[in-house]
Image 1 (tube, one colour):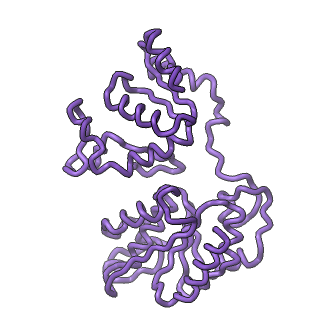
Image 2 (cartoon, one colour; image 1 turned 120 degrees about the vertical axis):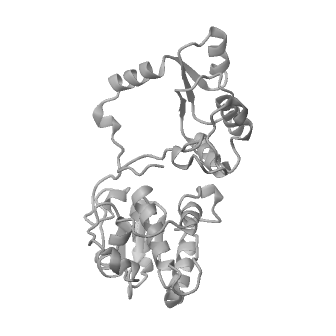
Image 3 (cartoon, rainbow, N blue to C red; image 1 turned 90 degrees about the vertical axis):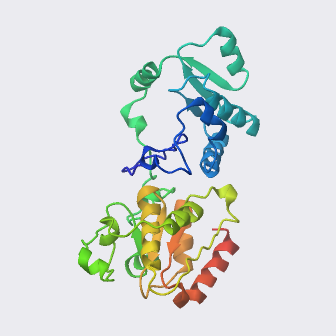
Length: 306
């Protein structure tokens, strides 16, 4: 996905031009390639199917005769007959085709892609297009995630955000990093991550996919624990920082990064969850120094189903 401020997920089911040379996930350009479209894309399509169980889907910009689109539709139809209504935009529906799709909880919209977009632009007000991020209330940096009005934030919450953890978020104050110092091993903050001085590593992508982006249905429970292991000096800290940065900046998650010497406060984690009702991602570097606190948090979270 391309990074964008306040963007929405963009699943490239047919492949991505940024990775056109990757033989494991080739671009799908011809009809004969549809038979193997799902190769190495199983989790990507599973995510789309999970959304299709819960949200309306609008198919537009493709001909409904496209065999790939038909295959996706049939799979979605069989998954859940009580799913939300779907819509197909096509300028050339025949009456028999309209009856066919209506019988399958899919409303045909006879229009070109351009006509459909112009119609939406005419009837949907500008104010209605913004995606609400909070209900208001509160004054901490976490307030954009709150689902309650006028959250009574505790002193312990403010203290923890100031002394124990860093709330990774867009607009956070960041000091620029000197590339020479970073490549000599100095890592004094988030500047190097923001400046993309670190080297891309597959372990980071795996961590983000498995720990951050995994659908709730695929998780073992409400509380998960992931460990990044490796010998000293192999870059575990940078991997954690990059994964935390991606989770917060690219995917809008609640991300807390434990400061050196900071404390893990169960009551504060519970308070944040009570106000946000969202999964909280707590990153702990040098976890061996916090074994007892991590164990206590896991027991507390699982006991309270956080």
